[in-house]
Amino acid sequence: VISARDFTLVNFGTPECTHCRKFAAPWQEVEVTLSSDAQVVDADGQLAAVQAVRMNCLEHADICEAQHVMSWPAVRLYLRSTADQPRYAQFDGTESAAELMKWVRQQVASKHLHAGVTYHHMFREGCRITGEVEVVRVPGKLHIDAQHSVRSTANPRLVNVSHTVHHLSFGYPVPWQELQRLPDDYRIHNNPLDGKTFTTERFHEAPRHYIQVVS
Image (tube, rainbow, N blue to C red; front, side, top):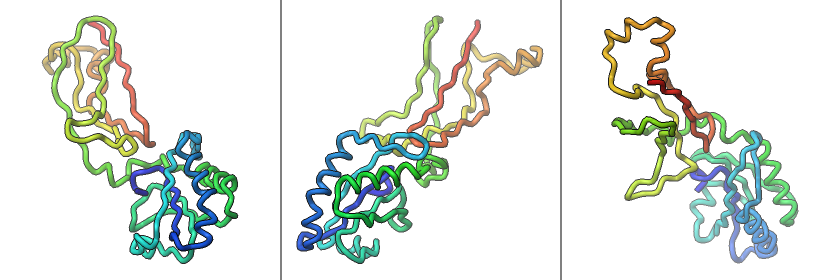
């Protein structure tokens, strides 16, 4: 769960725990707040998704042990990370929904979670797009999007559209010998995206290229 969300607020507890039962109502209020567009923003001013999760440490004792949960209830805010190397902050306030929400907002507002995503392990894989499209000679737009496949739905929180343009041209291919005859000032404007790499440094970003085609 913590690897698929920006932030995950986890309430570790057990049904038999007296303090957990007292905390049930404030926790439910927080769950409702976070699920109803709470508008929580990070240090970069980006809207951050915070998922509230209850963890029953009787049913999932192995998870609670692996996370070194020493007492209940234990409320932690996990940043997007892996289970073997979790990053989190633990709430040590009172059993108050208002105080917990205030703490969540402060924690999220101090984190630059969306920065440096080019190194996320999910981005080791990619795809190559090749082909051609026939368009009419009028002003318009060409969209190349990361979409769902016929068998699976893409997780938009983990889609990185960084890319390298090996070649993009309009019209019939121009022989290399003819391109060399053009003045340098003109030749550099032919296929201006070729060989360039465009990297998105944050989640939920997608570059746009604006090209004026003159024929």
